[in-house]
Length: 383
Ligand code: GLN
Image 1 (tube, protein in one colour):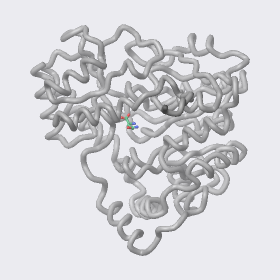
Image 2 (tube, protein in one colour):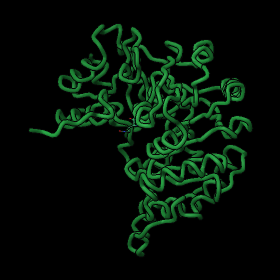
Image 3 (cartoon, rainbow, N blue to C red):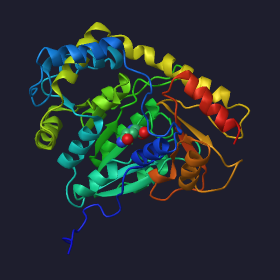
């Protein structure tokens, strides 16, 4: 007789990213589903990693992260966002943004708290809220533009609301929040004494001369926010699973109480290699908008003769394609079918909603070599 197990997450299965990547591999499909670059990181970063492993830097780092790395993160925030942060009390290096988000939610959401998430929302938020004993309240972004719907957001706030989770640039839509959005959020959060968890992992991937607006740049917002970042995105090393959280000292102290018992520390040689790279190439993040915008534009212009509808992404390395002129099939079944039949894999967007709207869109990752993007576009143009 198997042991009866009462699942803590009865609705949760294997993530769509794992499922689509596995299906892509099984069918030798071009994999534009799960978000990761198919090109290597900067050679200096890889050499740094090898150097630190060989030099014997293979034991535990300090719990909040290697101090030199935290100092360099503070310098980078100062440079790009014009905000000063204390590396000792406000910055925590974590083994991936996923862990940082999880620890922030575990540390700050209590039983019965409501947490507002904006659909389509990244898949790791709600399970963490549920494990913390809270309840995710889903507020959809505006259909089509994926802009924040202020009327619906404001209406969803009540006395049980503890936190709002935002994500800009936004996965999966590529939309970005405006400075005015953050000003309004600052007002709403102050009015109702809310915490903000701000997922900014794509902070450097913004296009067409847009600026990324961080919660760190709005003083009253910053005082009640945890901002989460990922080196995986910025330095094209998603497999290195390293990121950091920035929050005021009191919130950081609570975050670290959980972090130290979830993973204790992030990986030492990774932290040292990233620190060396940040010191040697401080301007590297500033090269990313042009680099990824060129990929977005290549992919979008190669799709001009296709039957897909598209609005070029404002940020991230994802492009949504509307396939309603081709078929009205549901997106999850279609993504699977196209992986098998056309050897092209994408992510269905409906899985990121509590109540999916009547839309027909798939998400394609353009963090790929140009020849792969052109090959993918050729396949898509023939559908
Ligand atoms: N964030 C990545 C994406 O959106 C995937 C990360 C994961 O597989 N969990 O595709």
